[in-house]
Length: 251
Ligand SMILES: O=C[C@H](O)COP(=O)(O)O
Image (cartoon, rainbow, N blue to C red; front, side, top):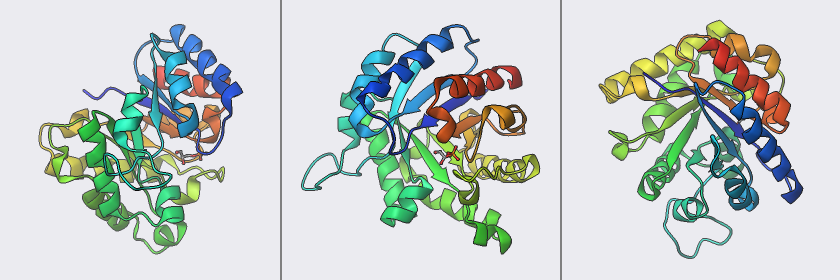
């Protein structure tokens, strides 16, 4: 049985004073049923402080990206080992903003996910189609191909998470319909089942894209939706906790 995950991605937002939000989320979780894991991925500058703040609570802390190598001449990059060293449990890899802004291919993303396994982190592997691809009827083809290429060969028997984020729904307020989400999530589960027999039912498949307190309940109740990857609404403790609360009701 899959354990749901409500994960927040702060993207390039947050200064040291915003660790109050981490405390508020950690405290708020104490009053909510423990039916799902809860994670915040702040920018790299705040991971250490956030992990200290969340220590001993049900909130865990993750990173938004990592390099595939352990160490070396890669100016500006951070390795999975460095992230694990400062208290992170998860790392997002292949977010569409990294695919677009940094030209990351499926091969690069698979190498980053493999690095996460090496460092003892759980990778959250992101996939999702653009609006042009959806309008051309290519959604399932694109998502299937990203899934096949971005999950590394060494993933069998390892814990990982898949996040489906239609690019056109990210930060736009345009949320995918339940039918659209279910079509893709059902397909992802089927593909995982073929590649990872016996393991696919334990792999959380998250939906991301304009998830908010007002729409979370219906999205989280959809088939094969095991939680959310939440951007904007994870920046405010009340909104993020309301989404966690919707998950409690849905599950
Ligand atoms: O990683 C999170 C997603 O990109 C969703 O962002 P959003 O909730 O602001 O649309």
